Image 1 (cartoon, rainbow, N blue to C red):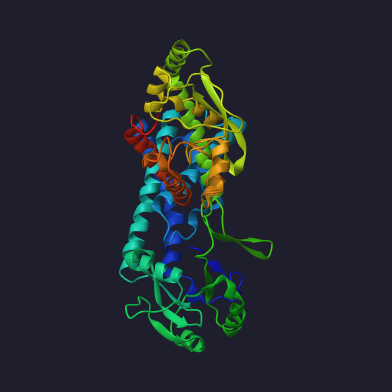
Image 2: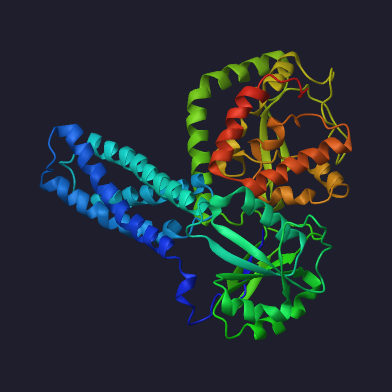
Length: 482
């Protein structure tokens, strides 16, 4: 949901805007993180040498690494508010910060030639154990905060100006997830409100003119303004009305009629900008970098492990029918950039009309005997690991379609081009849900696109891992591809 802060630069904010519980948790995490880092080093040393007191070389490494940990942990958004955000996302940022700590120390040790007397086994134990302990610490603190918020402690009190569908959806979400720690007290009527039935989930607190008096009497942390996009001119009088009230004000525009993808707000200079459609909002850049690094590392390992299998397949393809081992085809990747996708050739050599690509069908006479087995087991996709290693594809993402198919479906399916906000993948959310292979009906392609856009909205490292695991179980050997 898009929440644009209308007074982020407001000076002199009331102290009540800062939760004492959140502030205490922030201080506790900053201290406990360093204690955990130190404790993990001592535990690893104890397991390695049987003593709790490290030698001088070890103490130098520990002290230097603590300094780098302070730098990396504060450089990344690790101590931001994680209210309402997923645990795995927080753990991923933690992992990036912890990995950055050891990367900085490695560079430092290489340049200054220090730490040569230090056990590499100890360093490995410290790195692995430290991450586990840090993740456990974060999980415990998060569980404690969730428990407190579920019982009414550290709950933000919010009122809404205007009643629109997005607000109703937020209200339902907050009621189902009390651990988020936000409570909508009710709304103040405007002329653009949606129709309210007797079973309304929101309490009406009065007319808009009653808002200043209500804020003066009640403890409220935020005011949310909800109205259609074409009525935003009415916000200025409201801001003037609340000019002397030091309370956060956020905008929840009703954008239901606009085709959106991962909308968000940002600021360029002193100008606020609202992104209505983008591919990776809400995911800091380190997430995208982390995904790219994981893709390449896993692709490299997979190529090494599968090299004998790929060599055997290449020989089988060559012996089965004349022609090259690999099938190359121009596909569109992120931002519509074209790249050459690789597959093991599964069809006999044939010619097609200009700008024409015919999908394979059941009992397709073009498919070879080896090719039928490769397509059924998805082994024909293995050369795309080279595409992943080269950066044109990802392990998980929307499957790349032939360029003529893209041109055809863009004119028929709304939001089709939004699939290209991310890199295409060897496997994807649509494929593990059964939308793989031939799409003879337009509704099949529409459903595939819906799953692709759902993947872009929900992306996380854990989601990628889940899809890869489902691929092994569901896709390999299924009958959907010919």
